[in-house]
Amino acid sequence: MKVLFIGGTGTISLAISKLLIQQGCELYLLNRGNHSKELEGNNVRFICCDIHDEKKAQKLLEGMEFDVVADFIAFVPQDVERDYRLFKDKTKQYIFISSASAYQKPLADYRITEGTPLSNPYWEYSRNKIACEEYLMKMYREHGFPITIVRPSHTYGDYSIPLGVHGIKGSWQVAKRMLEGKPVIIHGDGTSLWTMTHNSDFAKGFVGLMGNIHAIGEAVHITSDESLTWNQIYQSIADALGVKLNAVYVPSSFLDACSPQDYRGSLIGDKANSVVFDNSKIKRLVPDFVATVRFDQGIKQTINYILNHPEYQIPDEEFDAWCDRVVAALHNAVNEVNRNK
Image (cartoon, rainbow, N blue to C red; front, side, top):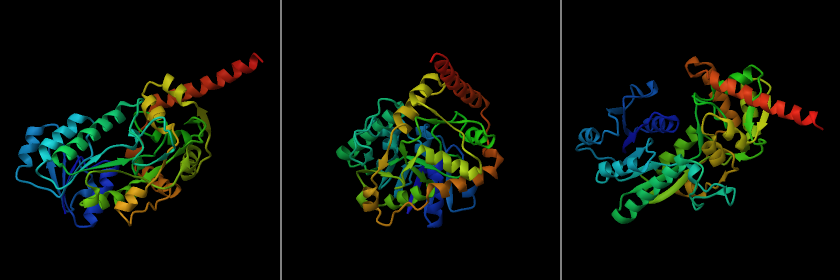
């Protein structure tokens, strides 16, 4: 199978690339020259180009055809419109990576199927993904463009700790706070349900959709069947670090109101909601798909990798100071109320 990935070096796409290499796939990566050392020396062909430079991309891809093209860095309708122009006659299947955050918020039913309506008034990122899906489905219906839409949820790997609340520089500062015995913010009361999917599990489902004639014209999410509360998620991270969890619970609306970054989308429009995914469709399309990495096992692998690779331990002093201010404000509010009893 001859495959082109646009991007191809992120949490999701790198795991898929590794699996395809193991299977002997003819893999091409088109990006700005970024590629993991793990892919060097393998049967991977690199096309150095910024996909937003459409004329250059068209020239580099001239005369090439693919069984599958997957774009991991398409976020707005203009991106998929460009991809349609570039690949409408060059591929047997075009896979768009959407997002499970596109599903209806707030949810009418915590159980999510591919038939759950797409609507997220809280997050522009999700609305753009919905618009991309709508354009591609239109191209499929009206022009036979062979699309497959894949909706990942919270997928993690070795390089970053998956969390609900962290700063713009990543999640390491939260782990550092845990190691230092400092209070760690958990949104809400920690009891809402969430789904974490290891990227190696996601890759199995994704590869099963590639070249799959039954996936053409379909939208499908790929997640684990394991449901976790945020309390369980943070406790598993603390256990993997070998420390006691010192949790402080903060309403998501409060975090959104006082944060310098956008928590309205990522929390109120996503992680603050209880979600449980029905994976019947991916299992029907890929009969041997099953997610096998339990979160408490996968997070140990992630923590061990990060602790042994200091380059992923990126400090975020600004976020750390903000956490201290939020915790102090909550304590002061409690003390103030108690004084007036």
